[in-house]
Length: 241
Image: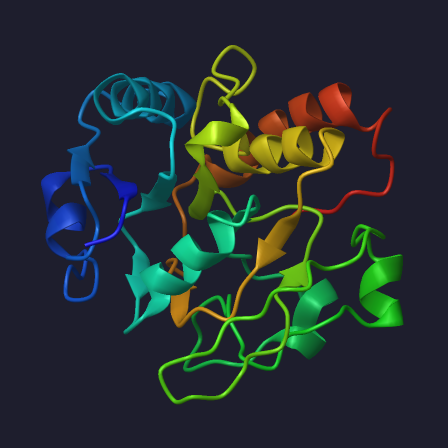
């Protein structure tokens, strides 16, 4: 077991039944939350974060929040834990052609991992990657090969995000009182504090549907305006997926 609180959120029981728990049994604890009341995800995360710190303290512990349509392959949660516990915010990136040259993965899912990710290319830097150096530590995977260093990004996808509780980060449930961009906001909070935001070489991906609900785009755009209003003055070139 690892000191990782993982909160998995699904919109209904059917979606939660689809969540693959095969490789998440190392979490202590694993919290499966069916959001029948459609509570804001930032609010759900803060309640779980407060409970974690109350009962388990802030010491060597990682907090994770993910959607029920995340797929975690063998060793992936250990990789996220190892990355986060070093003092980073880490997780997945969603589908975006800006990052197409970094993606490797199966089928039509959003590719969020690659053991070949290392330092960003000049094109990626121009697209908004942060300029600070990548941490010097590397992870050795189960095959005995040293992965390249985790890839720094502007923001992660809200579908999957991890950070150590001792960073004292908190989701902004007043601004992001819905289902979008609360994770991206955490990433920009981290950048503002000089905390690395990284995608490690974890065998995990966001198996998001090709067709979202009818209001998905409009809702996301509404919260993107809120994110811009909060952060564009500080980080004018940040990008999201």
